[in-house]
Image (tube, rainbow, N blue to C red):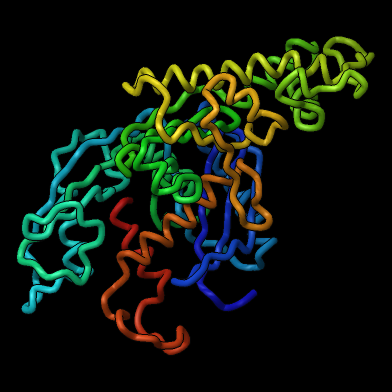
Length: 411
């Protein structure tokens, strides 16, 4: 391994725990290792058994450490769930420099000012997302750095979550002998690699269909507008297969992954395979077409529930930017055909483009890496601006340490 700086994302899902290790600089992001383990102690996106969850986290971390050859001590943790809520906030500060040029410290101060809101004791701030900055009355400023002004304001979205749920997640991470470098909202992180600026501006729905839950995020006018989580995912398909074929869940998961297709039309009656039967020593021979007859209705139902949930969130009709789908279930062959029949033609499936993680189940973890890098590049200290020094000659805190310091405000 090189001697570069590394960041690690931890995505604790319902079916899998995934760890991604990346070497990050201001210029590039390179995925250098991944780790995964079967998720235990979680149900429908929530932790229900801390000891089992800790074991799964540790297995995923150990897997990544063996691949990369480094010891992982700090991780950025993704958070999602129906406990997450959004609320507007406003911050204002006076520009501090004598020449009235707005610097990174002024931006940090106004963001901190936006965080000063009254919160119930059971809520905690996860993230503060700037919608726009205002410089001496001039609105719609996306990055005020370098502008000249006296008064700097920010219109922001405060993302909050249940303090109990967040602390239970952080407790699991700490019991796995890890330090928490920061917490991130997973839909925001995933949007970094899933959505274009045009889609966010027009209005788009991002749905991450995982093993035990489906996360839904609505973006409009360039910003996250609403989030929700449905307690349904790939495990429901597996359960239907287990019931329909009278087999145990492990066998149902195996045949789903190996032979499953999303539509009966694309299945073949000539592809057959044995399936063990519960309560018997014999095996039944099933063909791919029979398997697809079980899978297709459940997948269609998942997309129907996504549409219904978006309508319940107050967004009737088809979003102008359509639906963007990701998550492990989206790796099912021919699933786009079913999605389009239920959600309309404006649907696309997204997977990370990095070698080694080109699977929609890794979208959230890879999105976290890009989200961290982007926020750091926008808010790095002014001491490096205008300089072209070699990284080997830098003094003071490293890039990674400054990122950790910035994200520590969310813990």
